[in-house]
Image 1 (cartoon, rainbow, N blue to C red):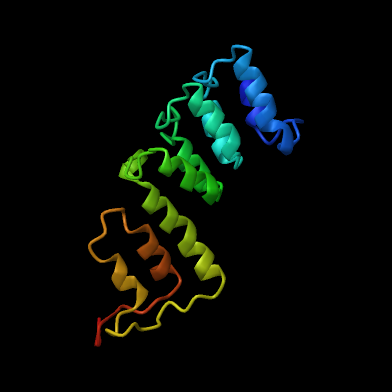
Image 2: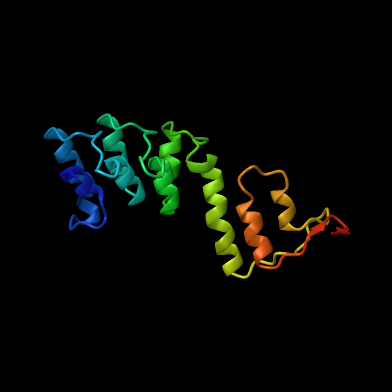
Length: 170
């Protein structure tokens, strides 16, 4: 890892309120905004994961590639921010042109990742799986025809949702 990676990583001793200043100082001193760690993580990926919009802005201005992917899991900065629940960074990166439909391993997109994160949270919080909408459909019906491996559907089924399709019980 480079000093720039360390400046944007929350696990370092750089206080969060100083990170953007340190990033700016390092970039002005010639730090490489495009450098990646041995595992393929960029400074922008670290900054995004840690929720630092200012550092993301500085890195992009210095030439950090917006949609460059991590070698192992193919996550880019916006995906790192989404996984870390950094909605402000997700919004910023999308507004400056990050690909909203970029695919990673198994063709998963940001929307798939969001669903995979949110469904377990809702189930853990006690969301009713068998509540009917105005057309007598249970939430499982929303999975019909999805091409993402049906993982949210599998979660609902594993939790015991009923297979009601409209008024018809299957």
